[in-house]
Length: 443
View (cartoon, rainbow, N blue to C red):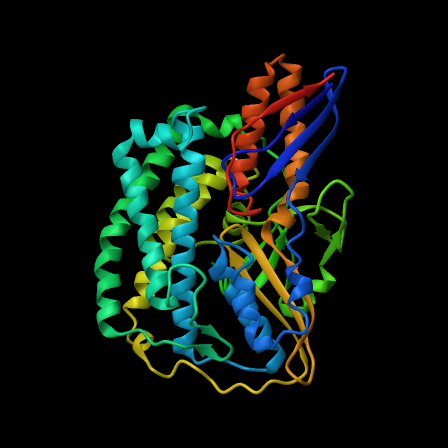
């Protein structure tokens, strides 16, 4: 029997799951990415490296800040450019805004329906929990306001440039963001409290699979990091087995392809193992956030899910805590007088070179790798995005969940729903579209 969930709903983009079942067990399971290749790596070739940021931001309508930052870091690495400290702080503020926007969007519109009103979608949340829904909208709006003020516009920022930033922050803009941020932080705490209450009261973690695996994420001096630092690889027992930066990623990450998908399948070069990235990976590899409120919630999360946590459902809990951390970090940056400095751009001179830019996109590790010629043109571009890295472990987890439900004699509708919940926990970013679910069974 073949079961196909096409498309999977409440994710960014078009995905299908095809399952072949024999004798009540999964014989084969494939995640089908049913969108054609985007070809950014190809059409960025022979473009001026200074334009790479503007092109890279168009890869995604959700993670545009992360792509812009990874891109500009790659160009600066190739050209040996160090942006002024004030510019780095503005970039980190912009990045925090992207996290607030993306995580709140996922939690409120894509994940909460699974927790509170399965089968009803976002309309059910808006109708049955209007106050919670309104709080989420306010929080997300704040993230977009940060992006608009610091980035020049709410989508596809125009201020990220090689050498730093193109626009300083005014005192009036800073004061407005601080004032709003303090109110939004209270709303975010109420939202996160609700998510934790739902998980504890309904024992939601028991509905997700435990899958001991490897993790990768950025860390800076033991702290949770999204812009800089070094990548740490953690094994299933919680031990860090590798740490690296920049071009050294080639020693640790390899890429493979499969016939049934347009998505590459990365794996660890050192042992051939699959690994996870994203919110769960970040809270596993880091000791703490370094901000008081987020660290309190992190302690609660670890009490529920452990450290390292191998439960897929903890992705949503970690995502909730990262909203708090992002607001706290944004406020900390805004309260720093240096963020008002007008010294925000270093001189750049195009030259031949190889550069790698690594940041943590909301969904996980994002790598931009560029080769630039002596005319300042991009000659080779390689991108490793978070969802690519998460697809291989996700396929493995879906097999475990499907086999477990099949062994219990669950109905196909239940199997479909639970598999989609697992996918949504990862918050895969394939493109910006949502569809109705259709389940097709081929005898």
